[in-house]
Image 1 (cartoon, rainbow, N blue to C red):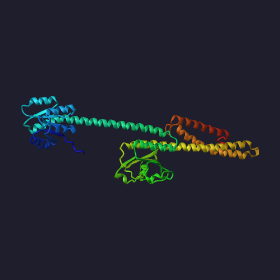
Image 2: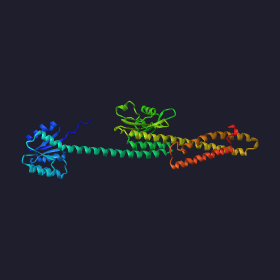
Image 3: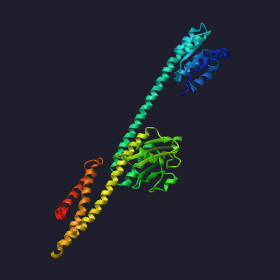
Length: 405
C-alpha cells in the first residue's frame, strides 16, 4: 500500500527564529511537510516551480512584499490558499491581502493551536479539490478503458466475421495470426494443431524464436499447450510462475494460451508471447473469443476443403460411369450382362459417398456450421442442388434396388 501523501506548507517569513518555531515546533510535529524562506522572490519561485498546499505569508518578506507575491499568484492563476501573518494593528494591510485572494490571517504572537486550526481550515478545501480531481481522473480513465474495450470488441467481432467466412485453411491461419497481433500487441504468435496421431504440429506463426522458425509444419513439444488442450481453459501467465511450463517460444516471459475447441473437443492452441511486458488481464477474454472464432473457421475450412476434394473425386467417378454406360449401350446383346453388372457396381460405389457429401452440405445450408456470407450461401445452395440432380440421374439410370441394394 502506498504511503499517504503529506500536505505541504510553505512559510515565507523574514524572521528566521519565528520560521524555525513554526516549522520545527508546530508544522512538522503535526505531520506536515514544511519549507521556509525569508526572501519573497525566492518564495515566489518555489511556489511557481512546485506549488505547496498552503502558504503562510508575512506581509514584509525580503526583496518582495507580501502584497506583490499575492498579485503575482493572482496573475499566474495559482490557486493555493494563503494565510497572512500580521502584526497587531496591521488589519488594513491584511484586508488588502484579502482583496488579493488571501483565505485567512493570524495575528502575532502566533499560538500553535491557532496555527494548526488555520492550516486545517485552509486544507479542507485543498483536500476536497484533490479528492475531486482524483475522482475525475478515475472516471476519465474508466471511460477511456471502456472505450478501448469497446473498440477491441468491435475489432474482434469484425475479425470473427471475416475469419469464419474464409474457406481456405491457409487463409484462415494467416488471418488469425494477424488478428492476434492486432488485438494483443504481442511480440510473437503461433498456432498449434493436433494431427491424427495426437502430435502437436506448429502450423503457422509470426516472429517465432529461432528454435521454432524452421519447424513450421513439424511436431513440437510444448507442455503448456498440452495442458491447455486437456483443460480447455485459457491460460495467462508471466514471470516465475511461467517457467515451470516451459513454453515452446524461447525467451517468453508472458504468454496467453487459448484452446481451439469446438463441440467440446480441442483441435489445437492459439498462443501469444512477450519477452518484456505482461499481458493485461482482459486480454485473456479477448484471446478466448478469438480462439473460438478460429476453431470454427479452421474446422469449416477443413470440411469445405474435404468436400471440394471429394466432389472432384466423384466427378471423376461419374465421368468414368458415364463412359461405361455409353459402352454398355453400344455393346452387342450377348455381352450386355457383364457391362450392366459393372455399371450397377459403379453406381453402388458412387451413390453412398454422394449421400454423405449431400448430408455434409446440408450442415452449411442450415447454418449448423455457422452463418455463411450471402455469396458463399448461394454457392452452397447451387452445389447442393447439383448433388441432388446427380443422385437423381444415377437413380434414373441405375435404380437403387438394382442388384439387391
